[in-house]
Image 1 (cartoon, helix red, strand yellow):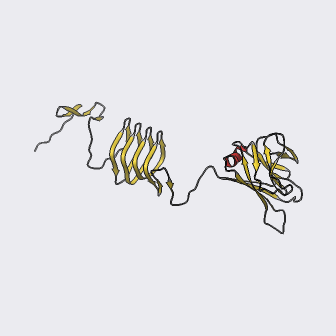
Image 2 (image 1 turned 60 degrees about the vertical axis):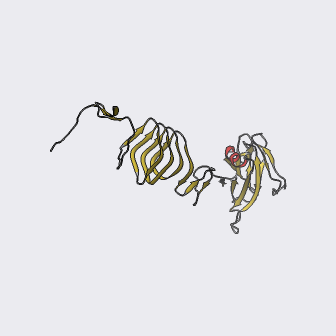
Image 3 (image 1 turned 90 degrees about the vertical axis):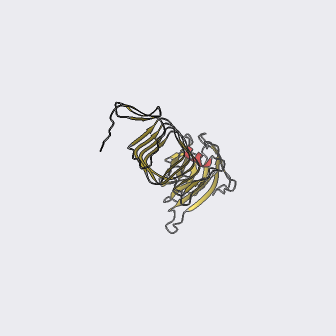
Length: 280
């Protein structure tokens, strides 16, 4: 019985070609392609170049403490029947594929390039070839909303409303709906009294105009105004409640600031509360 062992540093050659070299630090350098018939477990996988394949397929889970690529990962099909889990998934280049179909769960997902797909299915959400997104369930958006709601119960004062917020909803060409309501004005009638108008303005909401359908409680006229022009103009009035381009403090009004305000004016209904909803 013979036992053969080989120890040493240098190159392992095949047919005169240096195929594998083990350096003095114990690192293995492979000069050609690698085919692995079994399972491979990698604690850290890093490449400074490109990883390309016609098909990259995994029937189980691909796990790693860190999976990084400074180049491009390209393939006709990238498919995973299990989960791709990583503490950090990071690429400095592009991840491009005809089909991306997998569940991706990771603590941090960072890409410095683009994620493109001809057809992608993520958690039931489908992105088709035309860039359309189909969502089978509910869509919850955390961030910008398509409506703003304000209340004010401080008498003879305005609650300031940022002009940029009004412009975002009302200055986009299709205008916005203003719902102004007065509540708690009558202990025998809890239903709020309200007025509604459409407001259109320029991109900054400096110049604004309400719809001709508005019937003001006193004048019945449509309203036109310019914000921050030293002239007080009320956009909409609902009895003791006003949506205005002015600022009021202790019943003294000015239009010296950029922005709008919700005014509770003590007149006929001193116990009332005011609210305004701006809807795009």
